[in-house]
Image (tube, rainbow, N blue to C red):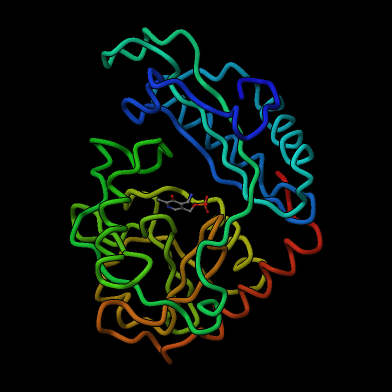
Length: 284
Ligand code: PMP
């Protein structure tokens, strides 16, 4: 918390913190595998990009953040972990003005996470298409990983109401953007496709790593715009995210995808991903 290790009970923020009052701030979710912090450099770069987009200045350098993440992992005796890094606008007055908050509140949590039941990684999971569109980039750019996640949470509630765990979100023009907490890919005729950043999405670190794996494995891949109809007719659909890693989609609304279970390309990518993070997870 703000540069010092504290026990869990003392890790608290003020009710006057603008992170709490307005969701004003930004964050990252990062994984560690066997003591290596997966693409921590990319995560901290994204944290800094999010902060800059909301005119929040980090009191710590990139290196200081990375050191503090390692310290927090070690203090918790963790080698495999889920790490949450948060930087809020800080404590201020009861008004929106962010510049009346003298210093950001910064904290790092190192814990574990299990997002989806393990069996779903074999069977694939059902998802729905959310009725609610993803935030309009000109209003609140989804590439900013801000503490304001209500757009995603309201779509997640649609998913839970429908008895599933994730929802596909379309942009205001009806193009597929991403899911509430994961990026989305499809496979058709051996080609791997994911929405281009211009669809209005969080440019996921896992998404980037999967695109890199595709290139290394010689799988043709592309980033472009597409509509939900194309996704429904795909051979395979899968989601990516720090917490989710890679998970197959078996059904979208009432449409079964491909064979209705994890497909061969998704399986190859999952195996390559697991092998890479098990042996020597890249930290840059
Ligand atoms: N989209 C959204 C909205 C997310 O919250 C996340 C999780 N951070 C992702 C995509 C996946 O990004 P990453 O692979 O960097 O975790």
